[in-house]
Image 1 (spheres, rainbow, N blue to C red):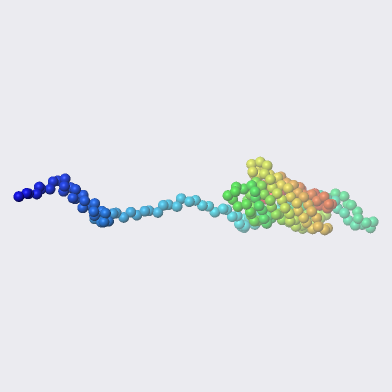
Image 2: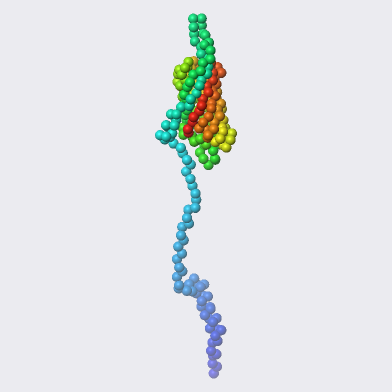
Length: 219
């Protein structure tokens, strides 16, 4: 009678391997140990942002606008006498000027800053290079003795240190005095534009042929 040989260790190992392989092929997990849950912490927000400065009128700004700039107007006075119009010769009159800037566009500020200003204009935006719609009110005494309003257009150009040390301006304005008049002005400014000298000329208007203004400007 033939007897079967006992299974060898190698054969048992092959059988066990086949069983495990068959379980994995059927999608059955080889181990019942659950996988640990992984919680992902949110990443911090590293983006940076800023709000551009937006200057607005304040009580301090309004008070500084009330400080006038002194000026001297030089012209020729004429009056009508019995024999007709008579030239009374050159005359000088003292005056005061107040200035406002309804709108200004600055081409000298950094591109990240807003270029438009309304009424409140910081010195850097004006003196570093800008174009403004200006409005000035002035009282001239003496042979003129009247209050004038001058709407106009002016450009500022920097000369030294982006206009903080020195800047210049060129402008034109209109006013009503013995008809509609046109004037032209040129100026030079130091101390970031807070102190300057302006010369205004009106070639076609004898009573106000030239006006020299010591300009004091705060924003």
